[in-house]
Length: 563
Image (cartoon, rainbow, N blue to C red):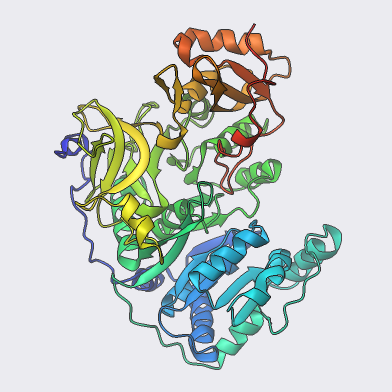
């Protein structure tokens, strides 16, 4: 496909980026430390770490891994923590030691954790004590040689750290009893690192940086192999896109999505590291009242999130009272941004909610909208620098501009494959080097890509394709709707029918009123046949609504039909 999108690039955005500015993520880190040593790098629970302090902490942790434990280059180190100061210290320590980081969701069940640790071959696990019980259940069946356990207050200083640990353990009782013989505390690991010289490991673009697991909702979770070159490429690509609206050394980014997720890892942790920004870590973004209170105390300039997070913030009565005068970048990804949410965001904050698109397998960014948009445009953006996209039909043939097909991506940010699963890699990579995303999309004449839906989520009603995103968009525009998900359920007349799951904003909203609203924006075969009201919808760890989790419970026979 011709790069027709280049003509729509805002001024100053290059067609290609410099992929060789940094040799590795460690190289990026050390250069940022040199430039911004005395500036705040990360802040959490009122404690700030400067770039210089983070440099020393990560060097001590790297020395622990290499010197005290004797880990070789390429050893896998699993991190299982929410957003807290220990995460960047362990992250950059592991990467500077030449290790491969395996990010683990702290909310994993024992089965999920055992699979990921076994599959990755992780030999060291760094874990918050709140989740140590889960590790305890599976550790005897694994080849993990060392566990490092940290507590919430370990890097908050005295007396605050001791107080936080007391409240977490004794008052809120958030730490189940656990026993991990041979485990060491995080501060003890740092102390052991002090006894060894820090010798940064030489790594390059071809060396693995992350095993980032994905696909757990569609089958067995697979580790996307992301190299230092993949991550550096995506960092450069996204930085080129947003740098015009941000100033080095002067930004404060709100990080509510967990850093163990690829979106937050690249977009918040690494890009803003290059910018010398202050990164405000939100440990529990689901506590919306506390989150809003934290935002009210901070003059933040950038925020990223998913649609459900922005929606939840907007629903809190105190959010509109925040001073948004410093805000310059609001970036939404991870799931489709709904027009109703985007319009409310602009009305409240005065800033456009810029939608972007990416995948774990692409480190993650593929498309980003111009940051100077004047209004929501229903697109996931333009393909970013040094990136090719191709819209292809089921036979692998490229469709013309305006046609609908599977979005395929080629570029330096695309993973080298799935860890230990060449057959799974072959399923998603084409002969000419494109990654098949599984997303249905179309491109307009200006090069803007519009995501239609997930290929596997498409609903077939009497032979007609119905895309859940479109149905959800219309339903979500009703003022009485808080959250919504659309799926297909078996139907004896049409093969499949559309079923809606709805969380109401207005308790008085009826099925009849919602369906009447849907009929004004959807052709007849797209209008939901069944509606079910719920108190909440199942979500991933970053807040993305899980349609697949609704399917086992969806039964068209007991759903409520339209009047």
